[in-house]
Length: 186
Image 1: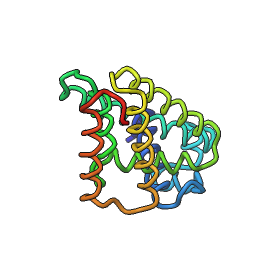
Image 2 (image 1 turned 180 degrees about the vertical axis):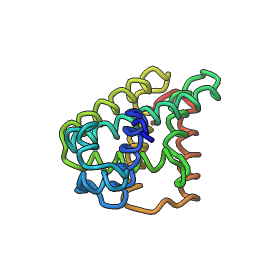
Image 3 (image 1 turned 135 degrees about the vertical axis):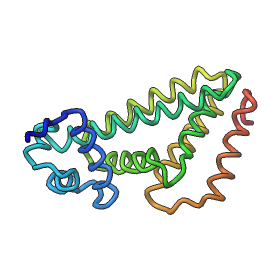
Image 4 (image 1 turned 30 degrees about the vertical axis):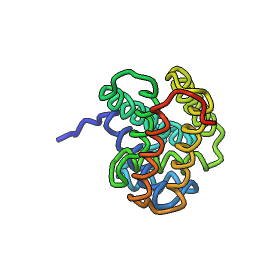
């Protein structure tokens, strides 16, 4: 009996394997390791992603889609007032450490450190797009910039330190408080 391949499912399995591989082996992980984790041949991986750079870019893009979906979900719970977009980004950033999105986030950060120019450019582009969203939120530009930079720092710190839930919750509360007033910080 012949089992039909599903290209979309295989791509998804390869991207999920890339996340696991990056979390375990770091940005120097080989495509052979990713293929093994996805239970496909190296040739099968290369059929979908001809280069490691393309694989990392696709994984990073998938992370951005997931993050944007999280932001959209949180926005539905907001009332549209000043700071709503920033609050949605704050909540999306503070995913539970055991969540699937959190794991993709960590892997995306690791991929960003890979030295692959296309991943670095995608990262800069995503940041610009998210910052443009903040700019339409009604917050003072300084307030929006501080929140955005803190969220970036939180993303990078997840690579270096184990999340401390109590301090994360306090930081979330402080950032949310910054969204409640639209004016300058000082």
